[in-house]
Image (tube, rainbow, N blue to C red):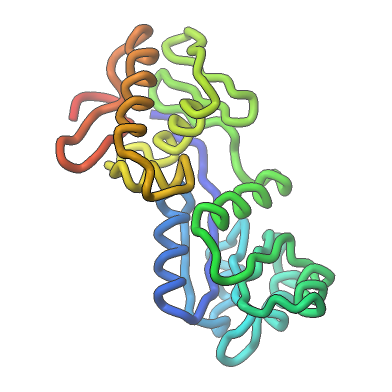
Length: 227
């Protein structure tokens, strides 16, 4: 199985519930994630973990997000997405002028934050657009899907679905996870997922062995070989 390296994300957020939710959402979208409650280990993390992007809260114990942003800019070329409940224009300008790539206000929708992280990584050229799993090649930027040497004609929604499943290769994901990550909602009819998974599976299996498997009662998994 050929696997393209994934982007690394460092989260610095002192609220445990937010930190856990952001970490889970980013991991569900295929990123390698390290989460910290403050910036005490920031310099070491920048050198050892070498993040491609830092999700950085502003209101932190010890050094605040603006001070930590200065550290990131001195020691790393990582992208920075700042999180804060402070919506004043001066704060936003301070962050952006200090070198932040994006600024997300709390409360936020996880799907939007994940999309913004992905957008920053793409602008910086830090995330590969192509993933290969066995004989399957998925290129998100070009919209090209190749399986066993054949081009697969997919819709825009099927491409998003396949990109998400490819990022989660080898992991079982639930319908709720798929709805949240692909459609951005948790309250859509789960049948929506079934319809699109079935259509995508038919298209792939017209050209090669089954890659998209159903795990009864749990969800779906994209991998080479039987479940």
